[in-house]
Length: 276
Image 1 (cartoon, helix red, strand yellow):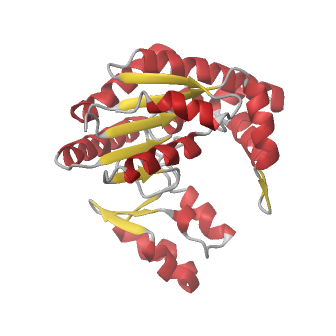
Image 2 (cartoon, rainbow, N blue to C red):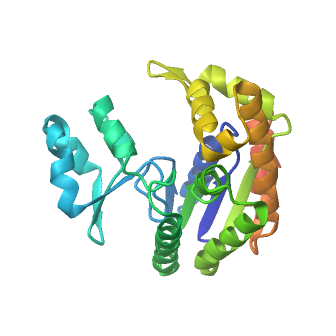
Image 3 (cartoon, rainbow, N blue to C red):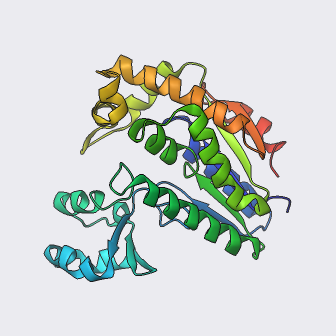
């Protein structure tokens, strides 16, 4: 096995989850031990959609939620004096619980950026060290670019050169794994987001409405006067361009696959020849 780490990236709605699963299935059928981490999972390198609580505060914060504490505990891992709770996997929670856990994430400037950077770098380095010793393939969906470009670009207002340096430093922690990055690009971002917005509607509300509200209220959104759907599309177009600049500056194998049509058969045929 030439690579022990595959990274799958692209803007929201580009098909990352489906593509990452197809890669995992492909290697599994070959008999290769494969670990796939998607958004919200307890993650060996990232902390998005996970709450981080000190052990001292854990019981006090969770006291109101005894009715489903067993479900919480099932999705809690202890690391270096902290409880990491994969709260989106707690299926029996209440709105109050999810809000309390969201408030204890490390993203969205909830901790100082210097601490955030050190924490994430340390987790990636630890993962890289452990993965190097195993005969396993790991696949990360959205953990490298999507979550962290959100933090750097939209929250910290970092420029492109700063982000290039950040991601070059981060990828250096896993270079011994010979990582390969696949990016699902979108020729028509508006068309992609419009299609996905129609699909992502549930009893909890509309995905696109939540995305617009989030974007409008980020430091980037406030600085640039973002207001409504059209402005969010403009941000996503800029974001895709920025992410492509970042990955072209990385010292690893990268494959940019156009996926606007969601033509999975054609895309997979092209991707198979690029798999490590």
